[in-house]
Amino acid sequence: MSRPVVRYHGAANAQTQALTFTVPGRPEGWKRTTSVNGRRLTPKTMRAYKATVAQYAAWAMSQQRFALVSRPARVGVVLDVFTDTPGADADNYAKIVCDALNEVAYDDDKQVDDLHINVVRGVRPKTKARLDVRVWAL
Image (cartoon, rainbow, N blue to C red; front, top):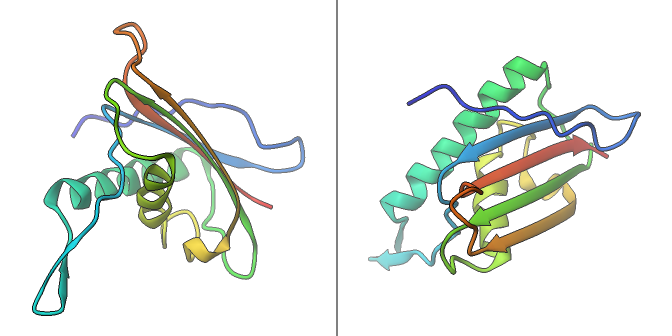
């Protein structure tokens, strides 16, 4: 995998350090899992994208010296999704990213109390499909 691209979007406010990173390529949304004999099976593409988001987040955390936000601290997350296909619902993008950041940027996604999702569909070739993420302690 190539080195992650980290874009600095600025902190959430002047008092708070924010983790910011970009995951290049077409964003994946959460998809319904299937069950076999009571066991849930997660699609490979979804598992792979979740791992990719976690890897980019971990790399950005090391570069930006952002420490894991431990409980009981609350967390804010902003997602800017740029996709060249109709793609998933906004909440499905949030689900996969928030799950990917569990035990990476924060202890548990139950800490996320402030969530903003911006989805731009049908991006032009000049605007690359990507996912921009910003995380901070509230």
